Image (tube, rainbow, N blue to C red):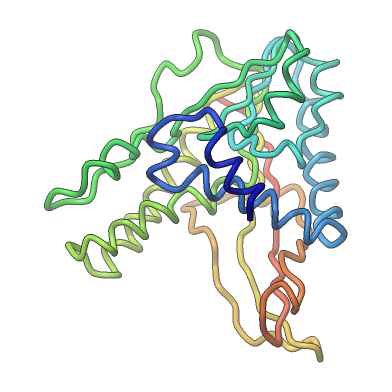
Length: 261
């Protein structure tokens, strides 16, 4: 706990990242990965391979953008740095170890950004209506060669949804519909942001007991007119011990490579 507390105190980040819990979640994911290193590794390696598959489809290799770069565990950073002239790592928080890893790489730029555009509203509180997501416009002066949304799509709407429910201004159905709009907005934005766009996301999660029976299932994304994925794999998110019960949690992950307009 002391290490986590020190990380929270010493990590340079925006007030939004601290007050909205994104710094806390980044630290929690770091510790969760350490506990689940062995069962997470196949997913992390699959993510890296798929990003490299997308990079091969880029005729030009000037700029690569990773949205949701996180702890870089699922980013093939060395290969991307050798391939692209510039790498932009975009997240709400870059922990100190990420800053150390990237400090000596002259072609890497760290960007702190809320890609939903909702953080200001979440901080000040809701009015009578739920705000529409507003991804950054003119985010890049030139169209990036490769844009990757990395295990981000299913997570973007969680904090906004939680805060909307806590406000007691909106019912669950309205909040759920809003969360779907947040996901759709991100999909639509990323789909045309670069010349080649790669989206990796868990699409559903299941609780599986010791006998292999599915005890519950929860969809994680709802995207209209979603094309067929080029890749899919399973990710054991939590063992029974980690989940604190009689079921392990397993996610289905899909990957898409989309050509920008």
